[in-house]
Length: 284
Image 1 (cartoon, rainbow, N blue to C red):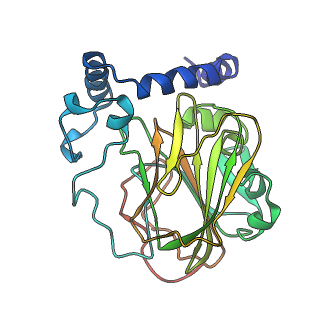
Image 2 (cartoon, rainbow, N blue to C red; image 1 turned 135 degrees about the horizontal axis):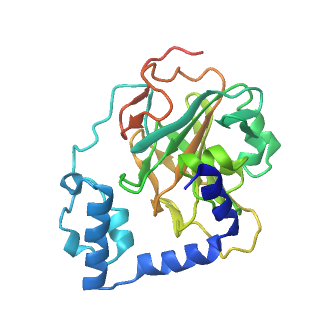
């Protein structure tokens, strides 16, 4: 199938209905049927269960339990680095934010303001800063961790579409990551404000954070905001931030002056949680 046709089909598919059905199935306690589906999924996508804290695929009560499985201790050691990679996955794009424009793919950009749900004051912190977009494939570990120490200041739920976020769709759908449903988590860090955006996708039943649980409210089409200025919710580098209940993408925003990205990084390169994302302490 051509890329153009694959993208066109996504405009036609009932993405929300598919996502609702997938979410219900993923939460279902199906006994042997659930175990069979998990076994098929492991074989189909080459999931490495040796890294899991519980490698027994028959012991997971639901598909969500399997998909959000923790890893065993020591599976992802943290590099001695200013910023560590927050997820397992692949680099979609990363680099400089050109004024307020984030590079998505050839011919496609979107604004920081659009990504964070229209908050121009928040977006202004990242003018000429840096971004990184990381794609989590079905085979990957799907918990999201902190790249550096940070204190949570707010969380924003932004309603939107549910296109796939795979590389083909990123090349074919304008403004994809500012178009899909997403959860924007804002932290204060030693480098200034930092944004971690969890981007939803087709059949991603829900997104969850460690301080809130499942975030996706009833889909009313309205932006929801939570502010935490009067609460102390602090996470250390490497701490779990949240998880996808079925896979997706994270988009990070850093202000100008943040340490440089790892010189070994390149688009499409595989990455692992805990590796050096910004190995030094110098600034751009």
